[in-house]
Length: 295
Image (cartoon, rainbow, N blue to C red; front, side, top):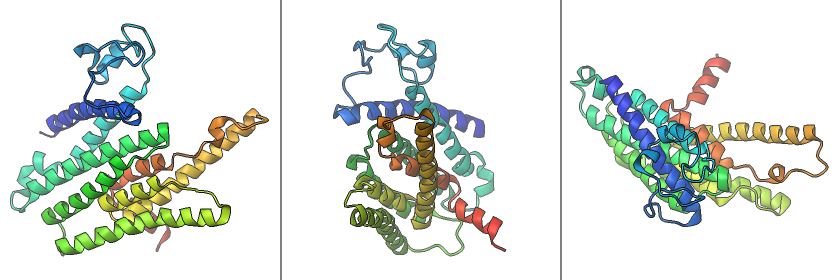
């Protein structure tokens, strides 16, 4: 059961990864994600069914269009594979009551709770990868994704709280709603305060409002502590990336900085990637710190 479930999660992840590529390609252009059918973006050749199999078709075609031989970006199979791997991880982490039901026979709500976790975190991880790729390629965190993401994350938190069976002292739905609303406001407030301070000091905009909405979404899905951990890790990773970019420019001894050296860092990408571990091990950073540095 475990192996069959993992295989199903992998194949379903490939399919939804392929759909993510469609959204990622067409949404910035304002196009429909439904029509027209999948086609080569260079010669408009409509793909045959066997040219549209996630991951496999890219390998069979050797990364090129069958009609015009234009190179197909490796981003397509990488995105598909990323979603497939993440969904396997979600299944292995949260699907235990489904493939080991004998261990949970006497526990109420185990099956419902398991399904809420599986569906919720599968959607959340899919959304994180999409936003990470959009910000990396276009420096864009669209409201059409982040704002519904906040609402869905808030709803998910209430549903999850209603099916939690492993807490000794579960909180009420009203308490959970209050906690997540505070988390949404506080998480967004971190970015807004930094944005305000940067403007007061330099009279320029620093972080965009899209980052604030993304942080609010993380607060809705994960809670404030996990969102704060995500922010700290993202700051650390973005700082390292910036140092490496500057070092690369210095090594090349360019008289004028390369355009990418002046480009703002896609901080939303770092936030999304840093949020992924919080799905599987909430507050892992604090737990590691406490174990290593606190007596």
